[in-house]
Image 1 (tube, rainbow, N blue to C red):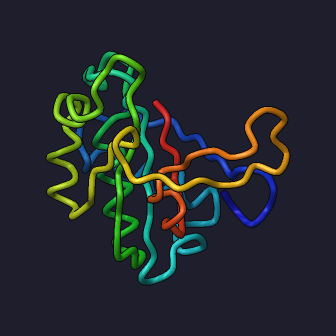
Image 2: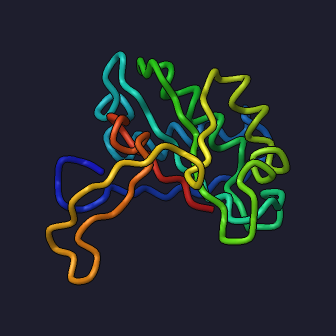
Length: 156
């Protein structure tokens, strides 16, 4: 989220999305449209990249975020000075995030880019006060969200 109250979003049309090399220029373009990653990431920052890994299905099904996209984004974050990169999500109830990491290729991505994988369901959590909450006055948030200087949501 930028310094404003509204999230910053960009959308680009990418024709070649089956490799990191094919998708990287489009990731760069999408980031440039929101002011560039250098406007968000400072040297030494921790960046949390949050794809959608609802189920352990390959990205070609449309159910999960393309791992080539996340890899290209992680590389560009590292180039902008991110010291720590975390790729994290929590699959839907009844599904296993670790299986999704494997099936979707995220374990390999994390190894190539030097990122950590975090399953939100099993991550250390901290309670955060929700002052506007009517029923939930406190919510448990994975600690990595609190530790991250930048959170990048990458939906399908």
